[in-house]
Length: 276
Image 1 (tube, rainbow, N blue to C red):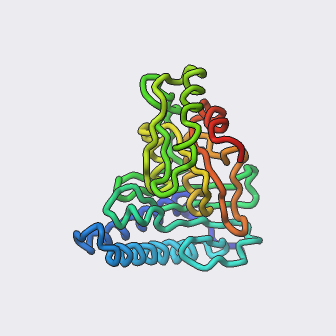
Image 2 (tube, rainbow, N blue to C red):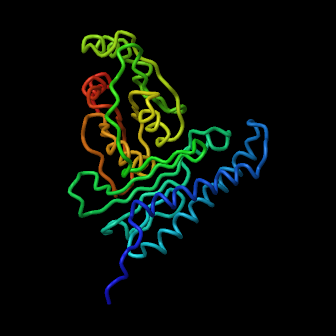
Image 3 (cartoon, rainbow, N blue to C red):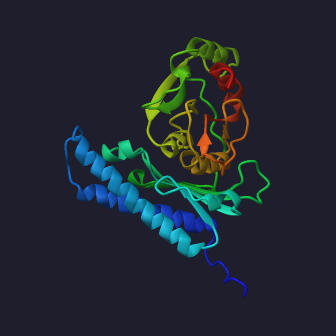
C-alpha cells in the first residue's frame, strides 16, 4: 500500500512545530511570573518544565506527521535505530536554557532534518531556528538578501559563548587584529560579544550585529544542525575551524568545534585560531 501524499513540506512542518513550541515556552515563562534571578530552584524548575514541554510537543508532532523518520533530541534517550535511518530529525527543544530562565531573549528552538541521500557532506535538507522572545524565525527556505559586507569602519564583532569563550578571546587577539588590517578588512580591531543559544548567535550575524562566531570546546549535534542549515542558506561559511565540513548522525552526536562567518573572514579566523 502506498503512503498518503505529504500535504505539508518538511520545512513547513518544521517551521510550524518550532514556532508553536516557542509559544509554549514563552507562555510557560510568563506563567511563572517575576522571580529573583538568583533563585536557582525556581530557575531550574522553569528550565526543566520548558524542556519537557517543548520536547514532548515537538517529538509527538513529528512522530505523527513523519512516522517513518527517526528523531535525535537532547531531551530523550538516543535510539540506536537512528544509526541506519534514512531520515533523521535533529532537535534541540530549548537551546539556551540558562538565558531562557533568566528572562533573556537569546534562546531558541532548533529543528533540522538530515537525509542520508543528500549529496552534501552535512546532508541537512531543512533547518529552522525559532527565536520566540524576539518574534523571529530563521529557516533554510527564507528569501536571502545579499551577504552583508564586513564594515571597515568598526571592529570585527565575534560572537562567543558566555560560559565557554574560545581561546581566541584571550590568546591570539593581537595577531588577528594585525591580520585584519593587513587584509584591508578593518583597522579597528575586534570586539567579542557574548550571546546564549547557538541559534541566537548565528542570528546575530544574520541581523548584522556581528560578523563571526567561533566555538572551540565542542557541543552536541542538536546545538548545531539547525543553525548550520540556516547559516549556510544565508551564504555564510559554517564549518569546523579547520575548514572541514560538519557531518551529522554520528555516535556519539558530538561536534568538536565550529566557525561561522562570511567567506572573506574564513582564512583569517582559521589562521588566528590555530591548528585543530
